[in-house]
Length: 503
Image 1 (cartoon, rainbow, N blue to C red):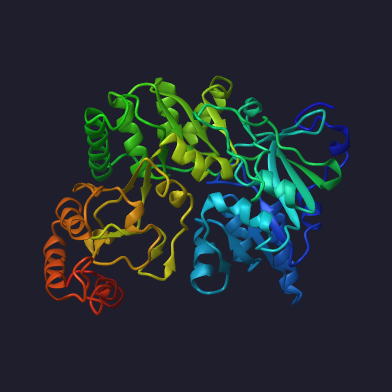
Image 2 (cartoon, rainbow, N blue to C red; image 1 turned 180 degrees about the vertical axis):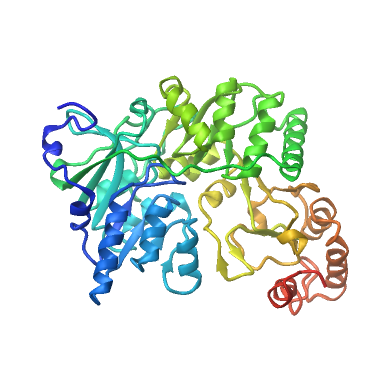
């Protein structure tokens, strides 16, 4: 056989997306590939959405459980959500249609730490996995699967699913082959052994995914690009936040708490994260490494500049220009990038051992250092916790970054009490806004509050925060973490009622 499907037995199972979608039943739990818009199936989800819509027109509602690695794309999440085709979604999403259905109570959603998904599926707590729909970039002569631009939970889907549909995407670079490290040594307690990674570049698995040929019920050839993640140019706010983070790293090196090449970087996705990475490209640190979830534009720039010698992740999240650069030089990146299953890229044991420097964005922080990274005004889900908890809880230094205000200055990112807690004060070392940086390590709650207000809060909200802290300290039930419980969430209620947190 020639081309991307080089195995004769699997080539005999080639069919179009509509025929493959007909093999998925209503009520099935379906594990689909995809992580931050990379490596998701391109054709079968759309064909399934059309089938769901047709069934609905006949008065025969059809829904499936949809499990992925992380966020996907409108042609997967959005298409199925639009036709009411999703019963339960997990573990992370960023699609506007899906988000609206969840917040309207029309779709169930389970938000879960990304490193925990594979374990929960092996435990069976979500029920059985009926079908896996996984994009690969090729199939070898002996039936091994060349992973695509993300691995995510694909190993688990292929292991656990009763039936497997493969999409073989010839748009993906053929030079992805050899860039992956798929570890087959995980197990549930009491049979677990240590994950043997001591450096980001350590290879502990094999370059391919494995799946018995008799489980594969369809092979669908495709040729379509990943969803590109457009990043806006670095603005002054992001630049100032990045400057504070880089100054912090400088001081940590001078204090002897970090080596001159830093420790492995973990960076969440977004414009602020890219600004930090851009600053590192111009900064004094050489020989850096990354042990993270996602390789985005700024990290690719660092690799090309020679500043970053190695990056380990589970997926890409690149703009269109960065995709073109990567695909044009994929063979050159093969020794500088490793893609792993997300249960390994986010593994708490490995994160703790390597001493990662975790940098993640937030919705809001309170003056004691608790973090909300998922909900608007306490009840409206935005995307999900993703992998931020995997890294924050286990990082050598856990850093959270955010602009100090949102909604044109109507909302403060620093509030008396967060309206939803994703990361407690115990997992938060540093908070950074464009106003400044608060190093919270070793401080009591009241000292943290004073520092966060003075260093991180926007000047327009500082007087209100100071006033609240002063009155809470004087009359709270306890003085360790002073709060006025009847008032602590009043800023959020004021925004809901009036459109601003300003009194």
